[in-house]
Structures are given as C-alpha cells and as structure tokens.
Length: 307
Image 1 (cartoon, rainbow, N blue to C red):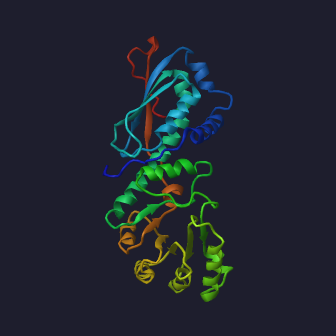
Image 2: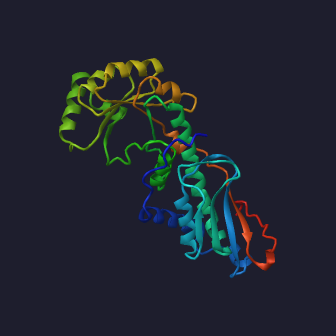
Image 3: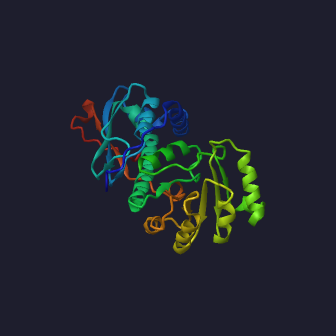
C-alpha cells in the first residue's frame, strides 16, 4: 500500500473532538464500568498496545487518546504512528499506560472510533490511488454517521481524499428534486442565474443533472460545478467535452473500487462517493494488555478487544 499521500494537514480541534468522545463514553458506561470495578484491583496498572490485525491507513489516534484521557486523566497514550500513514498487520499503532480499570473502561470507545476512522482512511486511499495521475479528486458526501461527520471527514482527508460541502448551510447544491420544481431549458438557466445573483461571492454553486440534455442550461447559468449523476463512461466523457472548462465537472453514482479508475479517465475533476463513509468496514485492531501487577508477573494477559 503506497505511502506517497501526505497526512491530513488539519486535525479535528480538541474542543470539537472531546464532546463527541465524551458522549460516546457516557453511552458506554453511564454509571461506570461494573465489570472492572468487581474484577480488577483499584490500584492495578497496565500497559496496552493497539495492534493491527490487518494492514491499512491510520486515522483517529486523537480520538483514541481522548477516549482514554477522558475516562481517566492519569492515563498516558503514546502514538507510534501518525494519522495518514500506512501500517501492516502486527504493527503497534499506539501504547496506553496507567490504571488498569481506566484502560479497560476506555477501550471499547477508543477502539470503535479508531477502527472506523482507519477503515474510512483505508478505503479512501484505495480510491485515491486508483485515480492517481488523472487529476481527479476523490471526495466524500453528506452520507455520514450522525454525530460523527467531522471525524469521518477527517478520516477521508487522512486517506488522501477531499471533503464535499460540510452541511446544507455551506454551499448551494441543486439536486434532481430542486430542478423538478424549476423547469428546464431557458427557464432553468434564468432561475439558476437569479439564485446566483443572491449569493455572496465566496459561496460555491453546484447543480446535479442526470441527463446530458440538461447540461447546457445549467453550465450557461454560470455555476461553479456540474455533477453528472449515474452517467455512463461515454456520457461522462461527452459531458466533460461539452463543458470545455467552463466549470468543474463532478461524477457521482456507481463509484466503486473497480470503477473509479475508468471514471477518473473520462477527465472529470471530482469523483464523489457516499460509500467512503456510509458503507465502510471497520479495520480489525486489537488492544493487547500487559498487567503490571504481581498477580500477572509474566505480563502475558491479552484483552484482544473483547471487552
């Protein structure tokens, strides 16, 4: 797996990250970890390694650290790799040390986030590598897990992808249901131009179409991006030819690892895929414990992510 992609340049700020992790911890242990309280001595300490069971791209180390530190502020987490970097099966991604009860209580939330975000980064990297050399960018969509959008979009960046609009408030994006209410031809062009006139100069304006015969009415309105939704490869290439650089061209629909290279080769500027966030598989990562107490002098206890 290539490591040529630069890691994400802007991580999620702590003031945004920590409330998300805190809510997950409150859901997982609303009144504390009963199992740890009755089985693990209060003063027991341990060291726990996050170990990859399969290769991938790392994303979410700050989320893992926050899960541990918000559970027990005395815990210490050391990253052994950076977000955006590739790892192999057997690699240690991070090491956490401190109170054993705290480590066990924060384990599941920390691993859940790290596994999901690394899964997103890994999938994105595969798409980005398939499109490499064509000039096409891989982008996510708003099809994210409610409450986790900022983290999942960070993971897309870690994988070498780019983010679409963050929310309905960030940009104008007219889709098929909007166009159905606006008419076609000159009527559509006029409606889009009037809408553009009401926007600030920094607001991006994108319009989705699902037929080539809609293209000219949209592009001639002066939009910033036209999205060609579920077009054949031949129609994508024809759409790029007709646009002729007047705006950006985005392809969406039927985007999979086995189709993305051919889509990129049509000359589109952006390829967006909701599957990067809504259908991704979490990577297999485990937390391997070494108890630092006399009760486990050989240091071989394994939690293995099963708690």
